[in-house]
Amino acid sequence: MSKYGFGDEEVEPIALPKVRRQSPKPQPEAVRASVEEGRALGFVPREVTAEPPSRPARKPGRRKGEPKSQILISGPARVIDAFRDHCEAGEITYWEAIERWLADRG
Image (cartoon, rainbow, N blue to C red; front, side, top):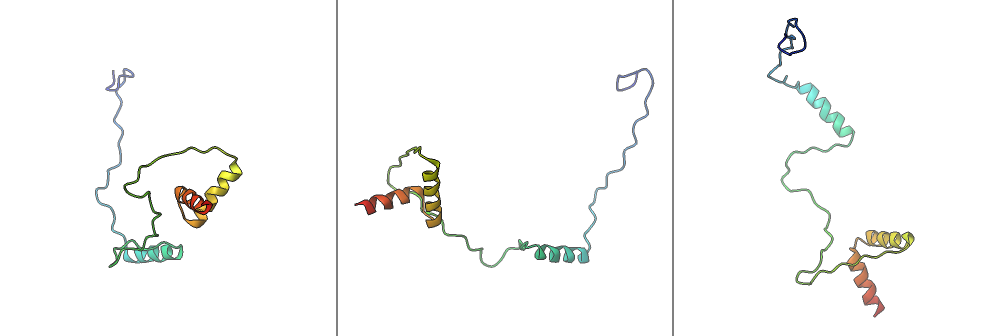
């Protein structure tokens, strides 16, 4: 029986290729060409800069100290979509839009 247990005949082990332990070092010209090609495609370098990149202003969260509550609103898709579009265009949260509407209502 073979060492695999499938038959009576002996099977020679498979000769696998040797694994290379070290990766080849990249050639400087190839690295420069890759960087230039990346820049042409719009990629930006990842090197650490003296000052961190600017981040867009965050939307304000709920006011600290106020209790939080939730509502679930069902309605026509056109109305809900228009409300979402209004909030995204004004860069305001849903609760801010409702709060402004209530303030304008008097």
